[in-house]
Image (cartoon, rainbow, N blue to C red; front, side, top):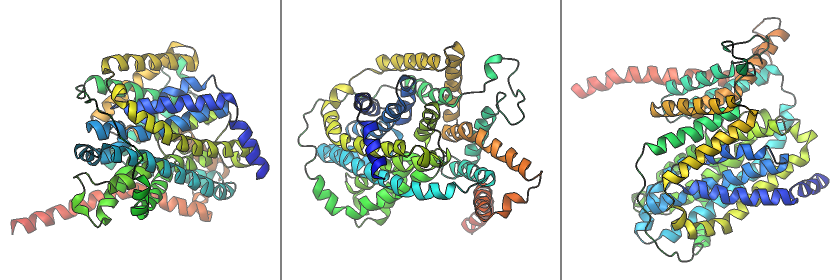
Amino acid sequence: MLKTLIDAFALISTWEVIISMFAASVYGLVIGSLPGLSATMATALLVPVTFYLSPIAAIATIVAASSMAIFSGDIPGALLRIPGTPASAAYADEAYAMTRKGQAELALGAGVWFSAVGGIAGVLSLMILAPPLAEIALSFSTFEYFWLALLGLMCATLVARSSPVKAIAGMFIGLLVACIGIENPGGIPRFTFGLTDLFGGIEPIPALVGVFAVAQVMRAMLTPEPPPLPRRKFGSIMAGQWKLTKLYRWQMTRGNIVGIIIGVLPGAGADMAAWVSYAMSKRFSKEPEKFGTGHVEGLVEAGASNNASIASGWVPSVLFGIPGDTIAAIAIGVLYMKGLNPGPTLFTEKASSMYAIYLMFIIANILMIPLGIAMIRVATYILLAPRSAIMPIIMLCCAVGSFAIGNNMFGVVTVAAFGVIGYVMETNGYPVAAMVLGIVMGTMVEQAFVTSLIKSDGSILPFFERPVAAILAAMAIGALLWPVMVWIWRKVKQPQASAATSR
C-alpha cells in the first residue's frame, strides 16, 4: 500500500496535473456561480480539453471542476436568491433570508466550509467502500452484472423528482439511443437509416454535452435576465464557522451520511442529496419554526450533503461503470477514453491511479476553502457579466469540442440534436438524467443479457440461481414494480378519500 501511495503522489505531482487542477478549480467556481449554469454543464464543457491531457490530468480537471461548481452555486443563491446550480436550490431561500438579515458572510462561509468538510467525508467513503466492494465484484458473472445494471436504471426512476412514468419513459429513450449502430452482440446495423456516420452509434459524450450545455443555453435565452447584484464589501467569510461546526456537529454528520448514501444510488446526485438533507434538517430540528427566516442549520446539513455525494457517486462508477450521477456519467466517458476502464480490475491493475483519484479529491476540497473565499469576494464582478455575452461563448465551446471528438461535423450535429431533445424533455417534465443513464448503460445491459443467455443456452433459470444474482434480481424487480404499486395505491385511496370528504 505504501508503494502504491508513493506512486500515486508521483502521478499527481507533475506540473501538468497541478496546473490542470488549479485552472479547472477556477473555471468550476466561475461557471457554478453564474445562475443557471450547472456543475454538470461545467464538467461536460471540459471534456474536449481532456483530449489533450494525460489520463491523471484529465481526471483531475473533472474532479476539481465538479467539486468547485457544486459549492459556488451557493453564491448567487445567497446574494440574488437565484441558485447557481440545482444542488443549491434546496436552501437558496434560506441563504437569501440570511443575506437580508445582514448575515451574508455567515451564509457563504457555511457554504464553503461545510462543502469542503462534506467533500472530504465523501472521499473517505470512496476509499473505505470501494476496495471491499471491488473484492466482491471480482466474483460477479454476467448474470450479476445484468441485474446490477438493471437495478441502476430502476433506481434512477425511483429518485426522479418528476413522475416515475416520465422517468421510465426518459430511460427508454436513452436505451433506444444506445441501440443505434452495429456495436451490438449480433453485429447488425440498427436504426442507422443508411447513414455511415451512425454505424459507430451515438457516443455518450456528445449526447451529454448536448442535453446539459446546449439545452441549458436554450433555456437561459428564453428566461429573463437576473437582477443586477448590488455592490457590497464582505467582512470575514470564515468567522464563526468553527463555532457552527461544534454547535451543529450532528447535523453535519447526518448530512455527510445522507450525501454518501444518496451518492452511491445511480442517478440521484448532489441536488437530490441537498433536498433530502434540508428536509431532514427541518424535520429533526429543535427549532423548525426558524427555517425559512434565515436559519443556518439547514445550510450546514445540506451543504455538507451535496458535496459528500459527489465523491461517493464515484463508487458505482469506478466499480461497475454505473454512474452515480450525471457528473459521474461524464467521468466514466473520460475514464474509458483514457484507458482507465471502470471495473474491479482497476483496483488491482491500476491501483496507483485509483489512489491518485482519492488524493485529487482531497486536494480539491482543501483548495475549495481559499479559492472559495476569493471567489466570494469577486462574486460581485463575475455576476455582472451579461448573459448575452456568456451564452454565445458556451455555444462556441460546445461546437468546437463536439467537432474535436470525431474530427467531423457529425459530432456538431449530434450535440445540436441532443440539445433540442434535452430542452423539449425538461420543458415537458421528463428528466434527462434518466435518459443519460439509459445511453451510458444500454450497451452494458444488452451485452450482459445476451452473453448470459448464450451461457445458459437460452434458459432464464440461471439468472436467479446464484445467491447474489437472486438478491439483485429481487431488488431490480421490486424497483420496477414500485411505481406501479404506488399508482394502484393512489387510485384505491382516492375514491375512499372522496367518499370521506362527501360525508
